[in-house]
Image (cartoon, rainbow, N blue to C red; front, side, top):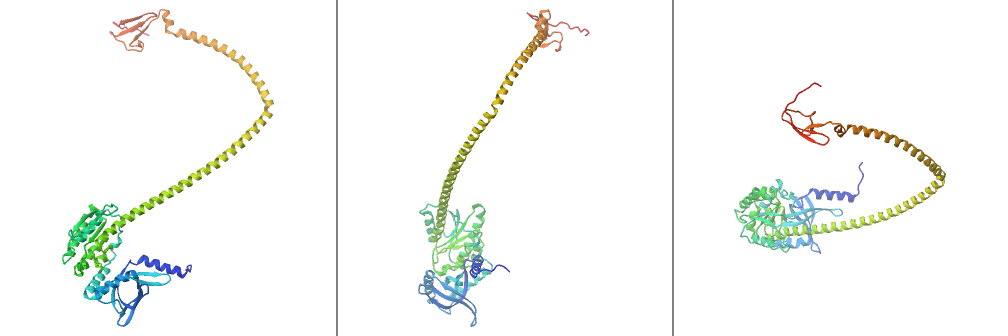
Length: 438
């Protein structure tokens, strides 16, 4: 049997498992039930699914006040009615699990067009098709660069939204630099999806050399009918399958198009996209400065700590050495006294022996010196007899060819030879060479 866990620990495990395995958000079709507004502006409801009159699925949900104020107003403006029980909606929800309150849904958005009619129905069909193909989260798997250096922009060169984006980027108060390239495309009407897809393909073709880190799809606001092109399945598929994060800033405040849904990140307007990117630059700079300060503080702390440790060790070592030196001096003094008292007699005896030995050595040295002097005189006489000068005094000569004894040189008639006597050097030329027996 495994170790038991507390209920709180089990609930934490459930929460962690849900957070790890569920997507950040889902679009859910459901019917509103038990709807009520709270005193603080929050909305509380149940989302249910029915087969006939039979409820087949049910889950608690809430809309926080900050979201509910804008969401409810947009819904009334587009549909002419308020959110109410029995209404079927398309809601964007996040799954939440609390250790105390259990499982619930947080509604982030409600697509009012779904409630209006066929347009929402077609959009939902496309969303379901994308979900079935696993494309809703495909582009979100890539990491969004906090400081993108190269950005590909898809927009119309004459669009006000593109101008707003460039103005915001080029004139940011921090002086951050963003390298970007525009890939022009038609941003509304029947031809827009194919035009935007062509721009995405152009980015892919340049990617190997340019290494774009981010794709931005932007346009200004417009009527709902102008936004229909961004609900195209093929366009959504192309965006989802890009191997670079895609950020949309299509400029439609009241709705979320499918292009927004499949993109890595959705931002409301082109200006907001620029602010979003620049905020990444600023956050990176602030984080960098913060970490540098942390490193500096940590370095100063450890330096101070190590300096104090060194001073403490130095003090300990100095005291240790002082004690050892004092002990050694005491030992040496004691040893000296002991040696002095024990060895005085031995020293006197050794001195007498040394004096006697010195006398014997002096006498032996004189005898040896006399013997060696006699040998030296004999050797000197032998050396003198071997000196060439000794022989020259007796009438002998020495003959050389090119500084080499003629006994060692090769001779032939015509060679020059030098003959040395005791007092002269005689130069001769060989006229004849006769060999004689040894």
